[in-house]
Length: 212
Image (tube, rainbow, N blue to C red; front, top):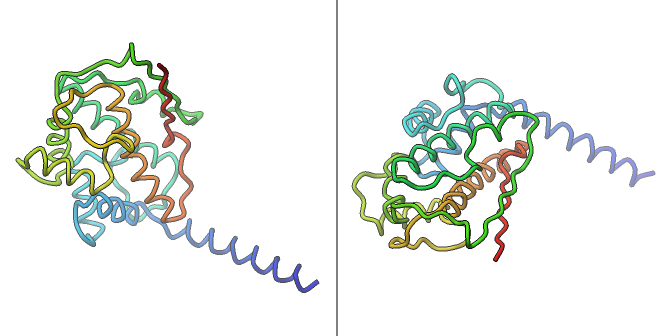
């Protein structure tokens, strides 16, 4: 009986904590955590965090609503803004845009993505990974006119890199490279949501399969 009582108390406390967390987490809180995680600023105010993210084109439709509770739909709109950012960077540097960046995959019903790559079908771009790193750093507002080495070091410290593989600054970019960068950025946002105990939308998961 005592064990059952402890179990019920623990269960009710868990429910109360979950409800409290969900009610208190606003878009402003997410903005601060994300801007900090991306090393845009240290301990920024909500206003500063929103300004930095907006300048980098990372925002839900109609802008950040700092006092409103976070919703799945709005999180996916933030995800869409990142896809648009990456799409433009890739196109400007003549890198093949992978289908995982299509905004159609972010329409309901929401599902994780799986993409299969074969060595014979990996499409190379014209820009090098180093050049892409420089442009991404500038677009995110993390620095201007940094060297390739410094740009790569900065992105790596944030957690943006081609999966668990190190950057190859002289190697040409590819659609596989683009997906790996996409996944690393999504993982950063997922870590922020998990820290805030916000359910992660299934669209934030992309599985990469490699075939010989």
